[in-house]
Amino acid sequence: MRICYRNTVLALCLIAGVDCLAQGPQWQVYNNKNSGLPENKLKSIAMDNNGNIWLGTAGDGGVRFDRNEKWEVFNETTSGISNNHVDSIAIDRQGNIWFGTGTGVCMFDGDTTWITYTSENSGLPNDDIYPVAIDRSQASSALRDDAIGVWIGTYGDGVVKFDGKEWTTYKSTNSPLIDDLIRSIAIDKDGNKWIGTLFGGIAKFNGDATWAIYTDFNSGLPSNAVYPICFDADNNIWIGTEGGLAKFDGKDKWEVFDQSNSGLPDNKVYSMKIDGEGIIWIGTVSGGLARFDPRGTDENTSPWTVYNTLNSGLPFNEVRGIAIDGAGIKWVATYGGGLARFDEKGAGWKNTGYDDLYGFDPSDDKAWTIANISGLVRKFDIITDADHDLIASKLDKYLKVHSSDVDALILYAKLGLRQEKYIDKLHEMLDKALEMEPDNAEANYWKARLYGIRENVTTESTTSFEFRDYAKAVKFCKTAISVDLENNEYRETLALYLSAKRRFEEARIFTKHAANGKLPVYLLLRDLQIFPLPSSVVFLPDETKGVIQQIRDKGEPSDYLMLRVQVFAVPITADALESFYESRLPEFK
Image (cartoon, rainbow, N blue to C red; front, side, top):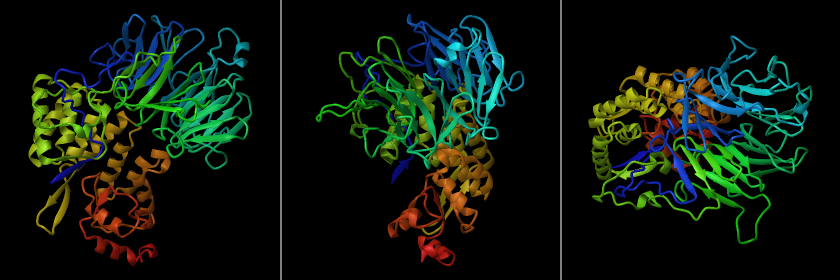
């Protein structure tokens, strides 16, 4: 038997006593094990005029890192910050630090003074804050001395302007904005506000009364889900989206770079920065960090260079933020590997401990370490039962020494999900992880999976599906989503669990806004409003795909309205399923 794990993180180094990430002169990585960084999931980064680096974490507040390598953490316990989940950081002209959190905006003077603005004590319409931007444009220089020009994006109530005294909200009900879910705000030298939304493209607003809206149906924008926005020296607007990178001259010329026509490693662009030489630095969701020289190179050299966990010292492939200091050093905030310092002019690259996961010898007796676990993600990793048992035994030995390694505890659960005999032990591992980190999204998610659907093969021809504990599966999955709102896998799994009990409307709600409304399971659920599935259908996250494979062998899944996804299984034959639809849908005949 061979076991298929979806998005399984299998990063077990086989090099005794050596960190999986061999850092060369160009790289230095700071994480929660070798520095004062409280956690490795970073959501934002900013740099002040003194060269201090400010970081926003997924659950441990804000962090200041100075050039003397002194770390200071600002969380709900040690400071006046209102929420430990920091989505954005901006620094105003007076040197105040603004933190966008899930419970309002916090202003910190860098010393002792904290002010929190919420919907209860200010003009904020919503406390769920994503981007914060400071107006440093030429137009803003005419403002009074005490004006601060802060622009705040909310998750559901548009964008808000705060000048230090007055609050003004612009949303779909009182402006041309199409979408009130704001993902990014950038302000050009002329004071135009460029507002990126989750589903409504990008809006240009001059701050007075003039608006222009650009979407994928009225412009060259490749996707309506807009993330980072930057401006180059020639006043071009560079826009990162879920459909690639777009260059816009501000008038009518668009150019799109994606995986099909460029060296971009992932179409989902999450962060971006332009250096002093005009080089575009692009952080992606799963493809690492990309360097793009738009000036072009000679015919023998690509304008694109990609740095990831396999060919460089980058500790994690999801890059949430990039900052560049006065010396040209790139500071890269990753969502799982901590902070990386990259000196492009260093002495040379050092690869990770091994270049290819499949090249390791699982029978090697050398000690295994677990470093940079999430950095070597393999989708649909295939391992044999024998390898599974060996890896589990190595993890057992590792955990005896490193019993508080939360990542290792979670990995153990991922590895053993299908092994019924280990269920109690897997629960024990995850309970320990949650005791140490109750807000760990991955621990909650895999706890949900343990309570989720199990396949019960009673005879050679009879297979039934059942939940180990339905209520707990849904509960833990919802908790994971509340911690990490942007993880589509969590939403997809919850939707499938809800659908298993025919709670289709609730499932649609959880998936409607994910992946720009194009999450496969949402498309299926939307179709279910018109065409029902057989009552015997059971939805699964990824455990069983045999029936779907049979149908795929007979034609493209896109030909079948109801079977465009490969994330559910039915305990009936493919022929019986096809017969069910032949009487209802002409597409099946």
